[in-house]
Image (cartoon, rainbow over all chains, first blue to last red; front, side, top):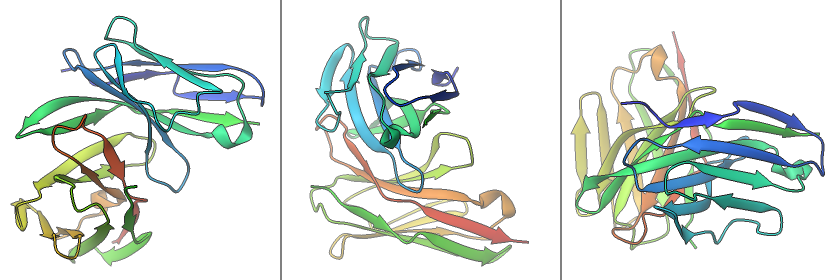
Length: 116
Length: 112
């Protein structure tokens, strides 16, 4: 099966500019996640969707970050305006049920954002 | 909140065993996972363990869970150069929206 697709793979912008990332999850996966991974750290969950509804966005900086999953399939994550500290890899993942309430996440390759 | 900690670096010789350790704070965690991340790639699930298990073995990988001490370890037998990567442990809770919390990652270097 095709994996999680993300684009672009790399993006360089100046602070205060806007940027958008796109994610196409594995077909049939209802749950979609966006993570921020700062260099040298583990992924931090930004937002989690179940179909087109938001399950958890408690760590999303809502003054500048937004995300949507309008038809319950593809998703976009936007940053407006970007700050230097937003430089990170943005990972998208989707999940399927492993059994007994456990889910396996499949990760995309990520988008590396550099804010100058 | 959840806090998952790992040592940052580990270096082993090819053919030796590697042991990567992880501690977590949330005793209600139901599942614990080990992920591998190679340079420029996303995370790949290696194995996972349910919290009522003490050990799980999968080919060269052995996971040990000490729930009392909230300590998780991953042992890689006969470590190969292809095992060089960053390893993350993660925890989640059953049926609570599948929120995952990741550790800081351990960078494993295998010396030929």
